[in-house]
Amino acid sequence: MPPSADPSLRTVRAWPFEEAAKVADRLAASGKGTALFETGYGPSGLPHIGTFGEVARTSWVRRAFERITGLPSRLLAFSDDMDGLRKVPDNVPDGEMLRQYLGQPLTRVPDPFGTHPSFGAHNNARLRAFLDAFGFDYEFASSTDYYSSGRFDAALIRMAEAHEEVLRVILPTLGPDRRATYSPFLPIHPRTGVVMQVPMEEVRPTDGTLVWRDPDSGERFETPVTGGHCKAQWKADWALRWFALGVDYEMSGKDLTDSVKLSGQICRILGAEPPVGFTYELFLDAGGQKISKSKGNGLTIEQWLEYGPPESLSLFMFGSPRSAKRLHFDVIPRATDDYLTQLDKLRAAPDPANPAWHIHGGAVPEAASSPIPFSMLLNLAVVANAETPEMLWGFVRRYLPEATPENAPTLARLVEHALHYYRDFVKPAKRYRAATSGERGAMTALAELLRDHAARLEALPATERGAAIQDLVYDAGRREPFLQPGKDGRPGVSIAWFEALYQVLLGQEKGPRFGGFVALYGIPETVALIEGALARAEAAA
Image 1 (cartoon, rainbow, N blue to C red):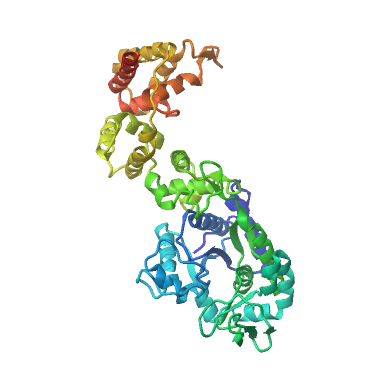
Image 2: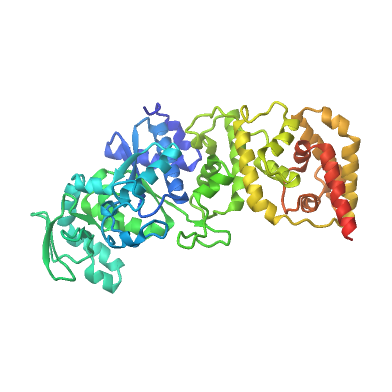
């Protein structure tokens, strides 16, 4: 049951509400009482991180629409499983068996894994399991089922009636060779079962049939346009779905911009307005190149979920969807801490502009945020050379004596993720350097301040200890070569002081707020860390 309408949410400065307002205006103009959102899926491969992003983003707009209007909505996850098998995937068993089914609809190709009636059914099951694992609310739709059951029959007849108009729109976008053989219809060969890409000799809308020839044998066939005996080419198929189902909203990547425009023209020829659309930018790899499944230069969803919680992936997808973003391992810690920050803000004040509000369906989750940032856990793993969760929990309990994996489940998840990330990315890249003479003096001073104030600092509540230690870190750095003018008239400290701490003590370029790190790691341990680093450098010299 949708919530009560709250039109004031139209003014919320968050892109899902801006998109939802467009859908609300569309329904107000059409008089429809239910909005249909759609996402498309090609089942020749497995669902991937882009699949997650599109369904998650569409779901946020859908939820915002329901909040604004109080109207019900549906999300259709449409699988184009009637597509012909174009090539044998590299990652399936019994590839030779599949080779004899090239060109046939995926739902007629045997399942090489032996678990489902067809290869299409197998991949559809993987898609549904994928979507279910993330708790998405959706209805699954099979292209094969929709064509075979007659759901598209009326729309197919309408496309046959408008065949020449549709061709006039599509042909100018094709090369000469493709233009000579193109038809928006793909008949299924009655003998071989192959999805045929052949020109139509005749299109007979009154009879509801297509006349075409087998290019190899020359045999002439007359195929019904209805009942699953043919399907539409994908651009025409997209328009056909919009027209037949009354789709109100669909997202697509920037690489499909021309296809969206073309499909919109076809949809209007058929007699309907295309849905509200949203074009999102594509992801880039670490070097700024477009991610490609064939190149394997991206980050899989399984990899992300090994190193960060699913909510961090949601937050990454939520931010600036119209801007190209690097999708690489090094974005995970920042995304995780940004999510924790937004979750804390949401718990303090529920705000529909907060990304966590959308990630959690407009509700405040029962599980609390983590009292320790993910970046802090990573750096704790660095200095402790942690190999097991128990090693990290030993430090955590000294800082938060009451914390356990049972009563702090978010923290427990982050401990596991931090260990995996440290093992695979941080540990191999650790590069320590020796302190300069100026840095040595400041670090020696910091160790003395920590030792002298240890009793006072340990007596403070854990929530106050990090800030008090940070003051000492600043005091130790107020010397050359780190002095710079401060805003309050007192001598300030340059960023070079903190970079020196990270590089000399942690073996990395960046790090956490150092006072908080010391509070977690321990004052005696930090003094020993400083003295050990300086002693190693002196011995090496």
